[in-house]
Length: 101
Image (cartoon, rainbow, N blue to C red; front, side, top):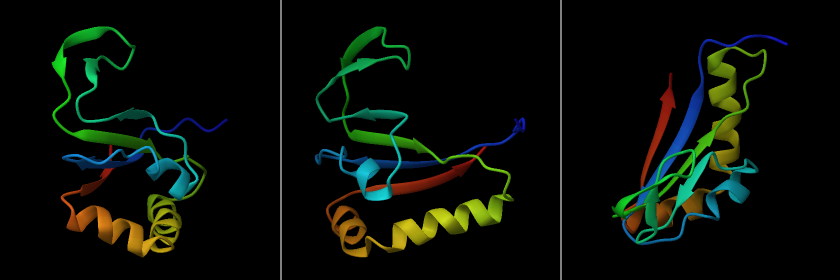
């Protein structure tokens, strides 16, 4: 198995919408997901004080033995197949971030 020193994640925030449909739209299981108003918690599930102010989803792209540009391109092909969905999310306050770390 190839050991990777980088990762790619796609993150979406929205002030009010449930983002649980994002993962199925892309065919990728979420790494982190919550809705506005849910109790806050750590990634391990420990409870924190307060409620989440926004809905959020983080999806980690599957790392393969492809160069980063190819992985991003493969993701963007999936993303572009759902243009109306993403436009609706963005026009209602959603924000998207593609992170390479």
